[in-house]
Length: 490
Image (tube, rainbow, N blue to C red; front, side, top):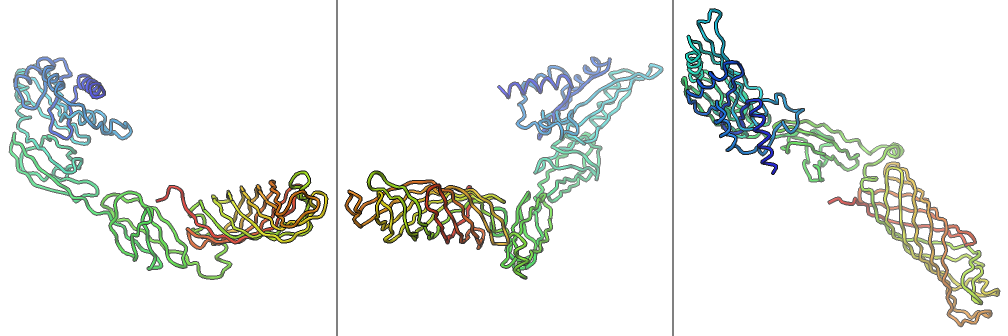
């Protein structure tokens, strides 16, 4: 359906504008007769039976019926890029050009003049004129056609097909043609950015045909690299090793990201965009990280935050202070503990780190304790062991000083704890061992310092406090290590 509709639209433009088409093949020439002598001129041209010329409606209709819709509309798909939309229409449709015929009579009426103006479909190609005169219109047309047929015809087969053609150093156009040229010796040249230019000589007589072929090999695109220190490693785009020493390197055309790395130097990235067949230049001097420790702290190392996500694991020790508990039911209820309890365990977590903000979700286990006096069910008792599972969602902020990253996270500590006693409790009807489960939510704050060893691994330490209404406070110390990654990265 699309192909059929497109053919109808293109046919409409041909009839409306009487325009020919010259795509990649050598198409016909469409004639146009715009003045009052149109019928006589058309009859004279049709009678000459010129090969490859469409002068009558029947000839144009026959061409349209056999024509195929173009696969590519070229610049017509984006009018902003068309320098000559009329010629672009001709070239897209596959017609070589438009021949416009007009006639005039001398002041004394004794001589008729015929002017033929040929407009090639190729944008930028020069228009050609052919003239004839005679006592009658028929004689003037015959003379003009003789002038036309006395020209030589040039067709070009080029790879790539969109080369720019020159005839004797002057622009000829682009595409296959045909091109009308003066008889004799000529130099035909083909050029295209990023390709080796081609040139050939021809010698063609009046009314003759010449065909030339060009195959322009693509020139290499290169990048001249100068960098310091000279032992830096250069990675291309997806971190593929590219260069290990300054020099000139072959590279594919287009846009690229190069990363320069060297031990004890700050890594840097550069973006280059190269046209085909050109040689670009890039000079990079990495800044040393040597010098005073204070100077290092004033800058942010690129490894920090290179990957925004992380998983972590570590060890945590905690001191659960004495205080109210109010855990359990009926006669076996832990009212409060009278001595602090020391716990130890492990933490794991998953987090994200932006320029200034952080988000973290942690899960930890703590266990420990000893014979701790407690009020149980209104009387004396003991808590021998305490264990906790804690979920810690938090958000926070961080700063970066070189590879060091102090941070503060604020959030909640959802705690599931278990009291256990092996001693008999006089006020309890339960026999040892006895257990009480207890759940509460507390406010949690964590202040710490991380060190980014490289773009993927980090280590840190910190302190935390957890406080809740009518609950014992918990102080903690933690050591942790993490692996940084990027979601979606290869």
